Amino acid sequence: MPDFGKGEGRDPDARLEEAAGLAEAIGVNVEERLHFRIRQPKPATLFGKGQVEQIADAVRQAEAELLIVDAAITPVQQKNLEDETKAKVIDRTGLILEIFGERAATAEGRLQVELAHLDYQAGRLVRSWTHLERQRGGFGFLGGPGETQIEADRRLIRDRMARLRRELEQVSRTRGLHRGRRQRAPWPVIALVGYTNAGKSTLFNRLTGSDVMAEDLLFATLDPTLRQIGLPGIDKVILSDTVGFVSDLPTQLVAAFKATLEEVVSADLLIHVRDIAHPDSEAQRADVEAVLAEIGVAETTPRMEAWNKLDLLDGEAHDAILAEAARREDVIALSALSGEGVDTLQAAVAARLTAGHQRYSVTLDASDGAGAAWLHQHGEVLEQNVEGEKATYEVRMAPGDMERFHSRGR
Ligand SMILES: Nc1nc2c(ncn2[C@@H]2O[C@H](COP(=O)(O)OP(=O)(O)OP(=O)(O)O)[C@@H](O)[C@H]2O)c(=O)[nH]1
Ligand SMILES: [Mg+2]
Image (cartoon, rainbow, N blue to C red; front, side, top):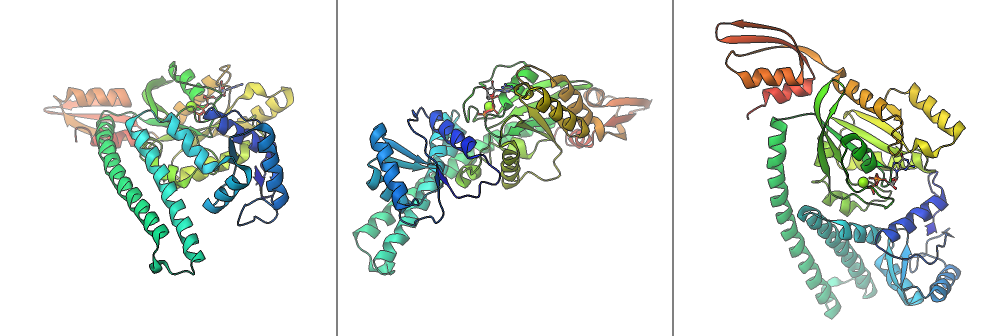
C-alpha cells in the first residue's frame, strides 16, 4: 500500500486491512501486506528504487503471483512493476472491477460491470498510446504498427461499449416500466445506503424478516433488493438494500451503476448505515456522501443515520455514542445484529415519514371506491361528505403521497 501521507484522518492499518479484504473478496490469499510512505511518486514505478527492491524481495519470498497496489497506477507503472517483480500487478480500480465482475448476478449488473471494465481499459489504451506517441517524438500521424494496433483495439472497445450501452438502455427501460407501475400503486421508498460491510443487509434482514446475504465480505451485495414492510402507523413502505460504497470507488463503476442506484436517487428517505465501531467511520461517512452526490442524490433528500454495530463498543464508548445519538434527531444508534435500538429506528423512521403530513381536501366521484380506499390506506381521513355524485374527503397525508395519488392510473 502506497501511503501519500494525506490519509484524511484514515488509519493506515485499517486501510491496509480493507485492501486485504478487497483482495480476499475475489478469493486471493494475501501472503504479505506492506505499507510504504511515498514522498515523491516516481512516474516510472510509483515507488522509489529501494521500495521496489523490497517489494520484489517480498514477492519472491512469498512466491506470490499477484501484486496489488492499493492506489491508482498508470499503465506504465503497472508494466514496470510487473517487469521488476515478475508478478502480475493490478491496482485498486482493477481490483474493485474484478470483485464486481465476480459478483454481478443479474443481466443488468453484468452489463454494467463489463461497461465499466471496458471504460477502464479504453482509458489505459489512450494513456499508453499518448505515452508511445511521446516516445516517437509526439507525432501520432507518423503511424507505425504499434499505433495501428492500438487504434484497432480502441475501435473494438468503442464498438463493444456502444453495444453494451444500447443493451443496458433496453434493460433499464424494461425496469423503468416496472418502476412506473410501482410509482402508481405506490408506497414511500426507503433506501439503505452506506459503506461496504457497514451492516446494510443485516439491518435489511432484521427489518424485513428476510434472509438476503449478509456476510463479513466486502461487496456482499451488488444488486438492489426491495421488500415491503410496515412501520408503526404506516401501512406499507418499500425498503431497498443496495450495493455498498468504498473510498476511491472507480468513477467508471459509479457511472455504470447509476441505473441500479436509481432506487437511491428517487428514494423518499435514505438511511445511511454506518459502522460506528470502525476507526475510519468518519472518513467512510464522507466517502458515502461523496458517492451520493456523484450519482445525483439531491441534498434535499431526507436522510437519517443508523449508527450500527453498537454491540462492538464497550461500556464508555457505547454510552458516549448513545448520548450523542440521543442529542441528534437524525441519528439512531443500534445494533442490527443484536436488535438493540432497531425499534427506536422504526419509530423514528415512521415519525420522519409522517412529519410532513398536511391536510388536503379531495373530491372524488362517489362511485370511486378504489380512490376512497387509497385515501384511507395512505392517509388519515378526518371527514367525508357525500353530495349527490361527489364525495369530499378531508385527509391528512404526506405531500409525496398526495402527488402519487394524483398521478394514479396515469
Ligand atoms: N457486531 C456486529 N456485527 C454486525 C452488525 N451488523 C452487521 N454486522 C456484521 O458485519 C458484516 C457485514 O454485514 P452486511 O450486512 O453484509 O453488510 P453490508 O453493509 O450489507 O455489506 P455489503 O453488502 O458488502 O456492502 C457481517 O459479518 C455482519 O454480521 C452489528 O450490529 N454488530
Ligand atoms: Mg449487503
